Length: 246
Image (cartoon, rainbow, N blue to C red; front, side, top):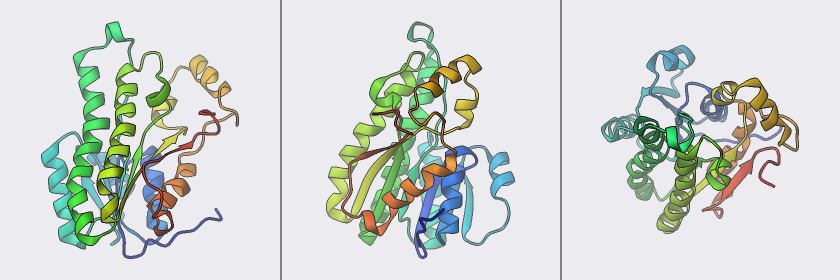
């Protein structure tokens, strides 16, 4: 790794931080001297991964789909560290099925975690960012949110909604020193690991670089969008996908 950042004095919240991309992002921010809130609804996994007692890490059990859970978490962060400077909305789930077999639960749960969760965290954090005159919001979307995918109409709707949400928030908050951007990743996560081998081989063949990224390869892009240097970048969706979106 040749790119380094210094987030000393910044408070960073990463949702879905117990595994995968979220965990890799949180580790990068910790290594960059930030105060890092690692949020996840899986308390057991969160404790296993982040229960080491680092004074600059605050593990919080948070269900992003639950507004009260989110509001309580943001209040706890501000009470402990006085600010919330960077939010990375990464939490996500998959409940795949073709549309005529898609259940209410599959639709509602995916929209609740991805889209409503992104809204809940952003809405709770923005007032504190406005007060300080600084904020960075980085949302995790997907190629599927632009192009769709068979068996993922719920996921595509949620990720497409996040793109539109990001652009709207970017316009609303720009005058307060807040930026809102998104990344479109293509990493080897638990969701990817659950794909049947034959289908996974087909998916890999569509990647110009011929592989899925390690989750850690998403970190530098997110850190850049969260940095002081990216102050004039807002409302963009940055593909970090090995060329899939070309």
